[in-house]
Length: 234
Image (tube, rainbow, N blue to C red; front, side, top):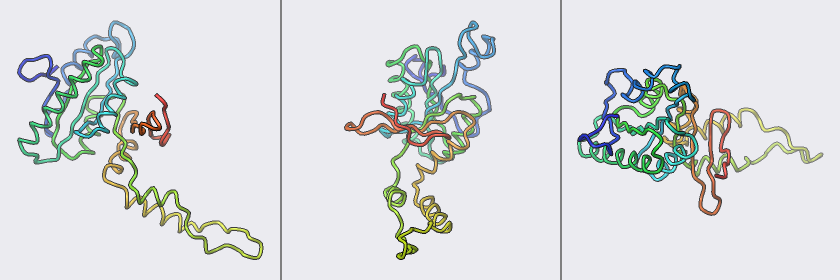
């Protein structure tokens, strides 16, 4: 894999959004083994891509992907996306972080191939393009907690002004009220929530958003295109 300073402990490949469209060296070597993406006729080698940053939630998602998704000889790609025009100092910090996370993954599960990519560009389009370019099989994201306003809107019933007192039958809530509620929820979602939802709906692979539950509850909440906030006690 690409390295810095020739050390096998470096997992970083620095790219920009204008880099040529070609797969990493390890993926090219795997493709040369033949067998339709299989090594020696064994199980299909998959690429698991994880979007990482400096947050603890991203680290939790990375470790979940390492322990629950990636298997022996699979590729774990850590993708760190920086805003366009990021300065040299921040880029160096991102590179150090990527190498640190890559080293942690390799130490925890040596049988998994690990690489880290640091790319400058719009976050959503960069992630989607890298999923397609590297032919990722699974994309794993850290799932942010819902914004407090959205949670209140989802959990709190609206005042009902259409109750028929004579027979105490509650009339159905008007459709326009539901539409307005959904519009407000969408407007109040954080940029992180919006990013995760867009990746889940648009990425050309299985996409999972992961959030570790509190110590008192345990397990993880997993969201996919088909299931939201599925509790996995593991």
